[in-house]
Structures are given as C-alpha cells and as structure tokens.
Image (cartoon, rainbow, N blue to C red; front, side, top):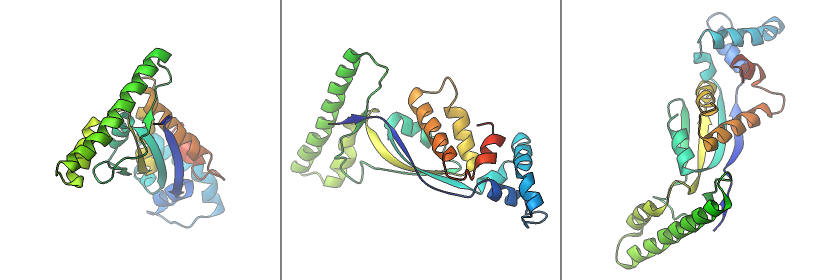
Length: 210
C-alpha cells in the first residue's frame, strides 16, 4: 500500500491581467489601446489596494490536487468563490490505497503510522466485502466502510478558483501558522501559476504582493 507526498497539477486557466483590467474598464470603454495596456499594472495595484476586488472574479485557475483528507477539509472551507469536486468513497471503492506520510516525524513514529494506515485500509476493504457478503447493498457497504479511513488517507480533488478567492486562499494558507501540508499545497499552486508561459497573471500577482 503506497504512501506518497501530496501533489498539485495545474489543469488550465482562463483570463489574467487583461481580463481583470477590461472588467474594470467596462464602465467607461473596453477598447484596449496601447496606452491602456501600459496602465494595467498601476490599475490592478490600485484596485487590489483599495479593495475593489470584484474584477478579479473574472478569471479562473483550475487544479487537480491529490491530498490528505485533513488538507482537503482546509480547501473545502474556501467553497465560496471556488468550485470543488472530489473522489468519493461513497460512489466508488477506493482501490489506490494511497495515503500521506508526514516527513517531519521521527522514523519510529513513521513506522507506527504506516502500520496503522495500512491496517485501516485493510479493514476498509475487508469490512466492505463482509457487509456485502452479509446481504447489505454494495452502495451502503461502500459509504459506511469508509469510516475506517482516517485523515491521512488521500483523495484526488478537482479545484477551481477565481483570482479573488485564490488570493483569499493563499493569504490564509501561506501564513506562518498554517498547517504545513496545506501551506505546501498553496505555495505549489502559486508556483505553478507563476510558471505559466508569458505570465498572464504577472501584474495581478504583484498587485496582491505574491
């Protein structure tokens, strides 16, 4: 049964600096002249600083995240302004048997944890089959046998933010007192956005001081 690090993949994105600026200019003129293009960095910085953040809802950033259940709960708490769908043990049997291993634990503690996780996963599968063999519907057996799976179990989640909600997520989850696992996920998400070719979010990122 494999343990592994959490993973983040950038699936896609829409919009960026120009999209945010054009949204702000809708009240006057959306014609994008060279002069207005040059003013985009200053405009976005002003909007970010003054709290005029609705224009930053006009973009989307789409991730696929493999994460421990505890970190998945952290992401779910940002449900307003983002969209989340996740692998569900209610509708499918989880056969990947993947779980997260805290690398900062002493080796002896890691060994105890691995034994516990592997036993929990074994109990999940065995209980599911016993319940079905005893006459329970497989649907009910799947959704109830998952109670054996602890916070360290990993699922894959499809997560999409608009920039405003993404910034709020980053602001909370990259704080020094944030849990290490969700902090890494947030940092990795930001890193992937910064690495998009031609930096469509370059000035937006700077406007929010990231």
